[in-house]
Length: 366
Image 1 (spheres, helix red, strand yellow):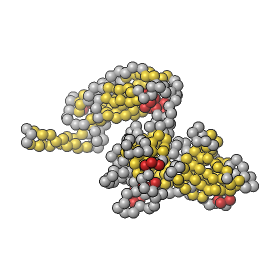
Image 2: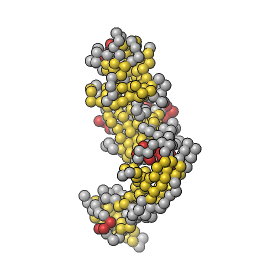
Image 3: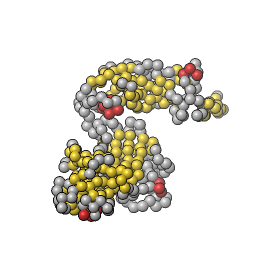
Image 4: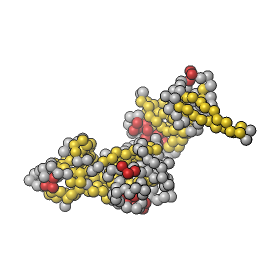
């Protein structure tokens, strides 16, 4: 596919000229004007709970494509043939914390926590904002890393779904794993009401429960849904929004995506379901950041149930046999898992924590 880039430059401070450059998906052999980056070596990296905030800077020489264009560099880590993007930069360096490096190595390259491993690193360069093929650095470097088990980081989400952008009670949500820099949260996007044409039903991602820290809207993270800009630069789904969304934020790639879900519900052997016939919808509490279902009553030894998406069997959450490390009396849910069981006859209030991976269920006997 061809991409055309227009480069405008000043000539003699009084005249503007434009020149048109055609970029094909090229390789270095196509042009002797290309200069490929060379990566500078780094020392071995030891990561632990005390130094995880320390920084490591990766350097490489500047690339050139024979014209004054903006170049996007991508740094990759590699082990045993598997590569993982460490980050991108528009300059010839990238600084990462040891915690970030540890997260990429453990979560993307399969190195176990508290073990040592040799990692390769290389850089790719391409003309920014085009679909041209990147060129890879002439070399790769190797460094040894001693990993550790990282704590989960968290973000906050604030929006109209809280009934008015209540930043002091912005729901908290967690990384999918320590250092992944990927965060997931399940919210009721229309909890504050339906979308009115011309009004904003949007949200932002925050680093803390205040507008003083880092926060991101449409300009800060790149969404993968159709998201027209508006004055506040909020993320928004527009007039086609459904009731609920499982939102995924990737701070490593600076992207945000969402799975629309019309309903989240319970179904099973409890009386209110009539023997696996009727769904009981879960209701979202944005202050406690938990989904509640019931109370529902189990009797006569009947004890099984599941969680549905969209009132059908295409997506179900079940199993709940592994105790949660983070939520008291909670059990981890498994997508596609087996039927869950309550401890015994009685009436239960079900609470689903959709702000962590895997999601967690608490069965509160009333």
